[in-house]
Amino acid sequence: MVSLFLVFCIGPFFTLVVSADEWSSYTDDRPWALGIVVPDGAPTEEGKVKWSSSSNLTVVLTIPKINMTDSTIYVIVSVMTESGVVIQAAVGIESGDECWRSYAMYVRDVYSSSKEYVPVLLGDSPSFSPGDSAIISIHSKFIDSVPVWIAEITNLSTHERQEVQLFSDGSSRFMKGDHEVVALESYTRSEYVFRNMGQLTLHGVFVDGKKVLGGWYISDGQVFMSDLLFEVGAGGPVPSFLYLVASNSSMAVWGYSNEPWEASPDHIFFLLLGALLLTILLIMFVAFKIR
Image (cartoon, rainbow, N blue to C red):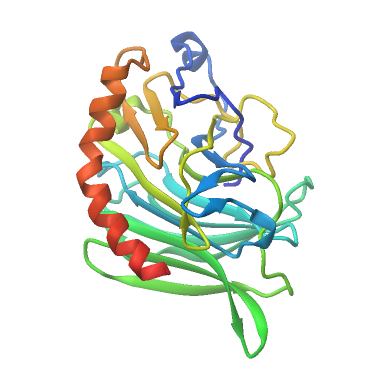
């Protein structure tokens, strides 16, 4: 599940398009992923991100309106601890399901060929209907004076919540570097699955309760970046029908287009404006909750 995303472009707005020929020639079973990377020094409401002194990553998002798939799809939040373990919490939909469920795991020996994947939560509650909104948090908590890593997933639409203890290895902070904090990861190659997805909307990323205000970049698994700490997915090419538009503010939108996507100001304006009203309501709620 973990895969190296790499930069497609950096600037005030981002769009990723892979050629149709490249996608049609893709014959192996590697998953693809497309997401947002938050580097050290990214601006926040009250300063800059400093991963090495932070211990809480919280993401607020609305999942896409996908209600069927022939293979697994995740909206996945990831971060690396100071001990080098990658923690992931996600909502995902499996083949045969009509709803999304909750997942959490951690990965040891990330840079080794024999990575150790340790699932903790597999397809459990809370469950999500397509289009529901979620808060996903990864943070450390001291239990009996021992730091323990926690994953917490909340369905904002139903108020259902689950918190799971992952592991304890003495670490209580994140690793310095660039973290791919949220991604759409897919094991399906079917365009049909995505045609009515609407939008996956990222409403906000919070590090220690401070909202990240841009300064991030897009990662698609195809270009090496030395400060990117870990991989999400397995580097399969992102299909040409999927786009990601992100602004240097606090929002991002993933969606389907049956034509090559261009990052025109009009496209970006209407995409982000469409999510703005919901974002304001969600952020007010979440900011109060996690502070």
